[in-house]
Length: 331
Ligand code: NDP
Image (cartoon, rainbow, N blue to C red):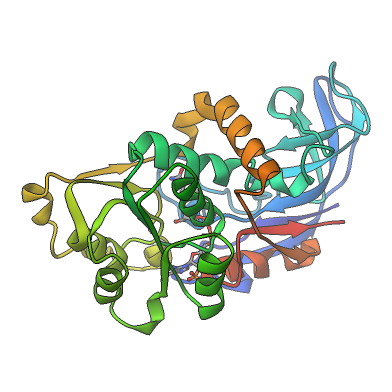
């Protein structure tokens, strides 16, 4: 089976030469493991950080080894109790066609409840990030005005809709194209949205939220964070979830110039990692399954077909070619 290896550490934007698609033998699963044929794997912004050789919350990808990440697939051989041929599982060995997965790292998923790809997005890691980041980290409460950046992406699109469902006074989103802005307002029920390419974020946000905001869910950093600090009301809260605007930067980016506003407004800026919030999983699945069934919560996925296009899918994600979760499909 084929698998993607990182062969050089990117400097700035990743280049095709930094990656190689290589052939690896497919063998019978060892004791306690299953052999999985991957059907979908996830490409995620955090993977850019793992391409650097720096200590972080997830270890860097090793050069000349298969990359990894979220994936769903079908068990085609089992050497583990509790998992049988034909079962669908969610696991962490993506970026490859066949994965030999330790049974304790495979979670059975039900294709009759939701399409398998949903376990990578709306019902998976990015959905839980939105849920935990809004309700736990930002301490969202009814009546809050919420601004989210990266609002047409996997995390952002869920944040805005969850805020609406739970009674936000106003939901504002920003995204990188007019088509995405239209989707936010017309399909996802945001009260206002803008294209951050159209002009300074600080001005567009002020116009979209004349009474200010109480919560900012940051997926982007940089100019967006600075603008949010300007618009935040007293006792406002920021979930610092991601700063994708600087993931390919080669120099450290300067912080918000207006950070001193944090004092007088008594703002709280809090970073998060979704892995800290696993305890919310049952409640998250129950709520989201209900909202999907009632039609209150909508989602999009962008599928890139074929393992050979895995690198292009990752690059496309960083460029904003996705609407909703970016997924590589190996059907
Ligand atoms: P998305 O589906 O949101 O895809 C990334 C999007 O980022 C693109 O579609 C693009 O949309 C936008 N983008 C790219 N460059 C820029 C830029 N310079 N300025 C503004 N927007 C940009 O990805 P995810 O939903 O998976 O992730 C969203 C964020 O959440 C990321 O920052 C990620 O690192 C973070 N995250 C953090 C987690 C945690 O535990 N802390 C867990 C999961 C995700 P557009 O067309 O609008 O520019």
